[in-house]
Image 1 (cartoon, helix red, strand yellow):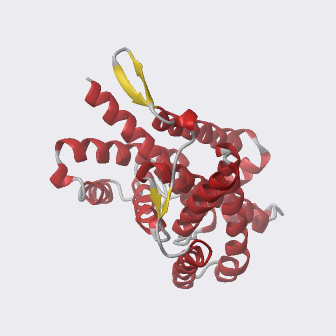
Image 2 (cartoon, one colour):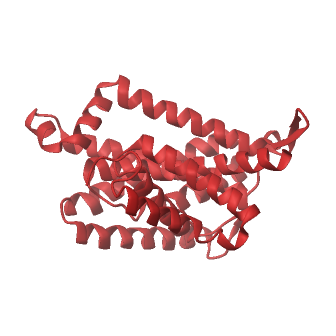
Length: 286
């Protein structure tokens, strides 16, 4: 029972980290039809900025919010100067965002050097506690809590606010939103900044998992996030949540019970979904 619960918690917490990266990706694609490969670079920048701020100030929460702000700032630059000029041209978007990710990775090496950097936790998040005889790691529960707050925030934003209504309408029919006189470019920028901030948050939260961070770390999780976006359904935040949890749990349980299958499980799930429901678990777009 202890093993099952810990694997479940590990899988959910990993799924939360993937969701933070994938949620922004799916909103950006759903509204802007942009597959942003530079998202992985924002993920890495969030990790490095947050770890650096924590080492300098000693305040974990200040570092967390600082990582989000840095991600949004870089997202603003990317959207304004790289992506906005190539809206509607998917080939150029691919080249520009891939180039953006490489530039972001190289800039990390300029500021922090080429070697990996250690990442540590504050004392209040270290260790574990026992609940009904089961040992639970504090930090993984903290990550799950953060993910829950972020998801609730997304739901409230998309369903209870005017800008959320415009975002949902834009995902369904951008031309209709433009015809109503709504500033679509401003909505694009807002969604891109929101997604960039969530990617940076995910990077910072990931850092203590492995204990080290490196400039190219975003690539691995960006690929995983794209798999999640496709499995969940392009443009669906709910689909991203479901797919992230499935991928996280499948990875945790497979690594323990079927380690030989652990590297292939995500691709197998992706192929299965593409064969059975090409639009994704929740997606409706073809």
